Image 1 (cartoon, rainbow, N blue to C red):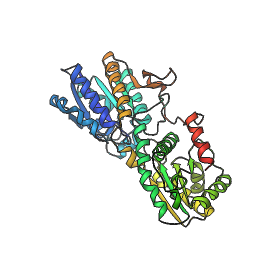
Image 2 (image 1 turned 90 degrees about the vertical axis):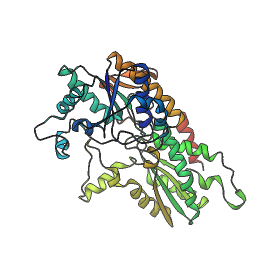
Image 3 (image 1 turned 180 degrees about the vertical axis):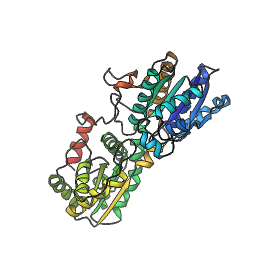
Length: 396
């Protein structure tokens, strides 16, 4: 049995641990198995670039659990986007990326492919699995759901998301002290989440838990209210600027600062409409997603709020790269281990799919059919913990 691993898309606090646990399982349960890793995701698969995991690595496999990022490297490649693959030099004109990938897997003697990534990675894996089956390639594809956005149908909790929320809270715990550098200061904490506000809400929840453990000096106005989250803006909730600005003006007048947790996808259409009106070009990645760094949502919201709140100083800070680069925390590690263990079991049985907590099946850990996997799942704002947090924030 020969196993290949690849990680793809943006990084998350689960990639190194997932790779480590998969390698550990195969070498422990199937000592004669061979394991390779394609370098830089699907790019490495197309170019035939891989590395071999030597058997001796099992003697210090725990070191994988101490690192963030991916030991194999990532890339953003969609095997059905032929034009982009040609443009980047991964294939030649007239070639089919799916065919090139399949041929490379056969050439390398691979019998199991594990893909570790978000919805784009695993929908690409689904495309590959369908191609392999249609063309009678005897190969099993089993994915693990990595994304800090936690936005994959029908998976209730994706790998790395808990850690990212915790790290975002730690990030803001330091940044928020900048509110002492000026009067009437506006701080915008921009958090990843293109279509889903879960990470923004969960980061705010974790931060407020940490805030509750701090003792303040109320006698000189070093009070909890000044360090609080004053607003949470997410894609799932429409933003009424007039109402929100009236409320935040009261907060600014009371605490001399306003702290906003902003999901990068919040109010996205407002920014897009403005750019289209001005005739500005909007860049997209190989998956067709708008490049959010180019839109700079934090800057746009800062400009709008600063005017309305009469802010004397504005600070925009993005925690995304800090959060997604961390090593997995204990809670994530436990889920990673469970998912990786089942991934090996499914692969050995020849079952294709993505391993995850299936919210359409009572959150049972399952090998979910590729046909049921898709991205863009919104955050469920009806959850009690979120509603309670918003009610508390709105009464500050």
